[in-house]
Every structure is written in C-alpha cells, then in structure tokens.
Length: 234
Length: 239
Image (cartoon, rainbow over the protein chains, first blue to last red):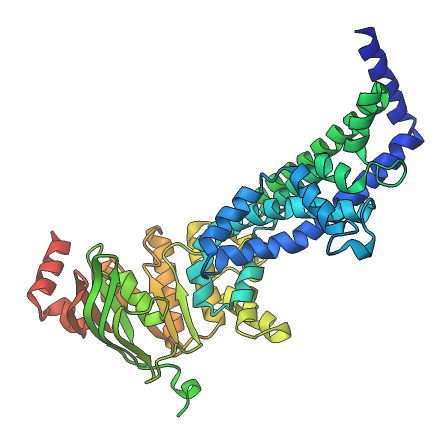
C-alpha cells in the first residue's frame, strides 16, 4: 500500500517538475496522435459524408464494413502495417518501420473507420432533414456535402476527438510498428506498458495521469463547445 | 424562346402516376399551371397534395406520365419551395439567405443587397444576425420566404406554409406570399385552410385519393363546385 502511495507521490512530482523523460514521451505522443487524428479527419470526414449522401452499388456492405472496422483490434492493424512497411513488404523501401511516421500510419488506419462511420451516421441524419430543401435549391452533390459537413461541425468535433482518444490510448499497433525505442518511438502507452513490466511504477503512473487528464480535458472541451453551439445556433 | 425567357412555364403534368410501394399516391393526374397564377391544391389528408407539389417542383419523378416546364422535361432553375416545417441551416438568418444565393451563383455586394432587401420585406431585418434555429416558428417561416424571395423565382411552391402558425403569423405569411406574387411570381400552394384558399387563390386543384376531382377557377369552386366531391368537400368544411 505504501509503495502505491509513494509511487503516486513521485509520479505527481515528476509531472509538476516537468521531468524531461515525461515531457519527451508526452510530446512525442501528442505529435503522433494529433498528426494521425488530422490525417483521419481529412480522410474520414469526406468519406463518411460521401457514403451518407451517395447512392451507389455496394453502399450497404460498405456501411457494414465501416461499422465493423470501428472495432478493429489494434494489434491486427499493427501487424498489417508492419507487413506493409517491413523490408519484404510493398512499402519496405521507404524505410518507415520503427519510426514515428509508421506509428502515424498505424493509428490513422485504426481511426479512419471510426471517424468515417460516425460521420456517416451524423451526416445521414442531417441529410434526411435537409435533402428536399437542398435539392430544391439545386445544390450539387459536392455543395450538399460541404453544407452538411459545415452544419454538423460541432457534432463532428466530438467524432474527431473520439478518434484522438482512441489514437492516444491504443498500444498494440504502435508498439508493433514503432518498436518502443527510447527517445524515438516511445509514446505514453508503450512507455506505461514497459515501465510497469520493469516495476518503475512512478513513471508509468505519471504518464497514466497525464494521458487520462489529456483525454478528459479534450472531451470536456468538446462537450462544453457542443453545449455552447447548441444554445447559440440551435 | 429559351427557358430563361419562359421561366419554365407553363408547368404541365400529364397522366402522372406516383406509386410508393403498393400504394398509388397519384393516379392519372393532369394539371396545367399557367404563368402568373396562384394555384391552390386542396384535398383531405393523404389525398396526395404534397406529392403533387413535389412532382410539379421536380423533387419527385412520376412513376408514369410526364411533367414539362415550359415544354422542357428538365427542371428549370428559378424555382423555390417553402416547406411546412422550415428547413433552416445552423447559421444566422442572413447566412441562410446567403447560402441560397451562393448556390444560385449570386455573391458579393449584389448578394448582400438581396439579403437586406429580402429580410426587410419579411420584417426580419433586425434579426439578420440572429441564429436561424432560435427564431420563433412564425419568424422561421418568414425567413424561409425571404430565402425564396431573394432568389426571385419564377415559380414559388409552398407546402402548407401556415399549418403550424398562429393566425397573426399565418396572415403575415399570406401577405408576403401576395407580395411575391405581385412581383410576377407564379404561386403553387397546398393548404387545409379553405378560407385562406378563398382569400388568395386564382384557381383550385381539388384532389380526391390521388386523382384530380376538380380543377377550376377559385371563384367558381367556392361558389358552385363542378364536382359532387367538390360540393361534399366544401359542405364538410362548413359543418
């Protein structure tokens, strides 16, 4: 019991004194997860909106596939990206394996389905409401898509933050394609796994506290923003 | 003459059927909407009024039969529609009008003039910056009319625009519709309010279970309906 209390105490001290090991790992984690979140938003938002509005053969199976892919196991994604980027893989010549870029790719693959599937649902609900009005105004497919994405932006912000939360908190994919190399590809989740197995609880706890605080703060911000938008814009 | 000169008029529906699954919503409907008229589509709930309005606007394609706009089978621009429940975007009142103008290719200072003009005409100039979705029901419907007005349509379709409004708001909407008609816009409207149709309509299309029971001048319809169903319909309203 004393060990746990002492570990918490040391962990809090590491955070408050901005321990270089903690700040380096947090900075890399944020860099990787934010980059993959932006990439996922760029791909997933238009993809989800296109599936919501478009009527094309195979749309139903695509929706099922997107929904199913939200639950992709991170280790499987990590394995697939590993095979893609390994020396013998199709993208092996790029030399990306065990780099932060490889981690960004893995996280992007992991969260694009999440962003696209949730975007599809939100935009489709809006499309049902707006469809006749937009068609009456001779809005083209592209114009309708942009209108719906803009009008649902506050709901989509929550989707993007959910994607960030999944990216920042997953460990399976990044440990496979990143290798958990100290100072290069070690992020919060992989560091927590490693330090716990080594018995260095203060560092693991400190990173855990930062991770939870970060995800909670972002989601609180999204919640407040949505509430404000709902009150302000209806 | 090209479409621009004709403005997609007259609108002619010929032997139009619309089916939804096993249900025939419209059957063999022939309707002609002449330029500059105010045509009211009347009928009981489920008679097919809203469906016919959408067919005439080009939002719904007939299952059988044809619709032509100024002799052309493709829907022309410069049409606008106001729905029973206004569909407004999550932006300001002015932003909603601006969005419609942008889709019509009107931008910049001319768009701004149109927005100010349209909002002023429906009495919403002071609420231009107010988010559209927090306006009252009557204000939202007037904003929908302002959006239509700004587009200077040749034809304005209205689907029971006063159905959920209180009498003063309904009269305000009627006044705006009259103003838009006075500018030369052809009006096609559905309503359940016979008094409203009597006040505003030039001609009446009475639907009975998806078929046209009567298409006559409004004055004749309200004084001496041609059809048995027309007489029964008016009698029912008086009871």
